[in-house]
Length: 270
Image 1 (cartoon, rainbow, N blue to C red):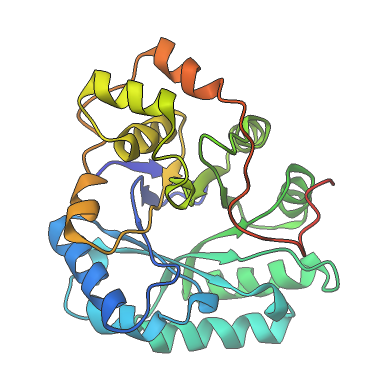
Image 2: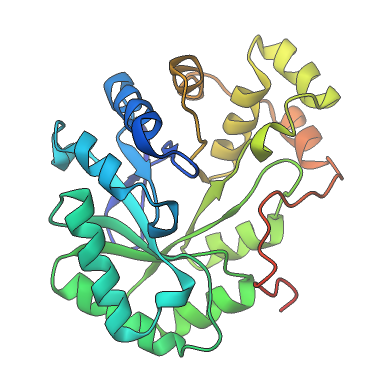
């Protein structure tokens, strides 16, 4: 599994399994399958309500070889709540540390400095290795970078051919922040795209593989959700081949704009 070095100094696997809307036995089965197939990166969040299921699975694997990302909800960003929620996540995940802990979404009613201070405390206490943000605009990301005493390693945002956030990606690169693309397959909406199907046929790959490869070549980390062994395995086949520069530009040129995840409470205009 290929990885990217974060600003914190730790390595983060380029491909992970997303677990949004995976709970109960379905979650345990999907994560177990992924780990057995060679995945090492699991993406979860307190908001997903599946920490306990994931904890039951990872206790059967070598923790040192895994990379666990989780997130604290935007409603729990005051100092004490961040510490409390992280400790709860550690208990539920049955682990001593979290590889990457993210602010799930910004909350303007709580001073960002307070949240970042709590995150630093967690790193100092070795409960968290790297910190980051999610659903942050360029302006808010730069504010977090400026106010944080530790590197902001990751900004996790919705990113796919129908929401090609080039300006945000370029800003992340300029500020040494790795962008993680969630909903990289637009929850299936891109699978019938005529252009993507033509490119997939050219490379003898699926549309999903082409899109994930496109994102990886753009320098992002991808966390597609998958529950079947077929799709989990399919999503792994993105490293032994490349998309040509011409075809990369064709995908970049898709003009359709469609945000899949409803985040009405986040002001994307600032």
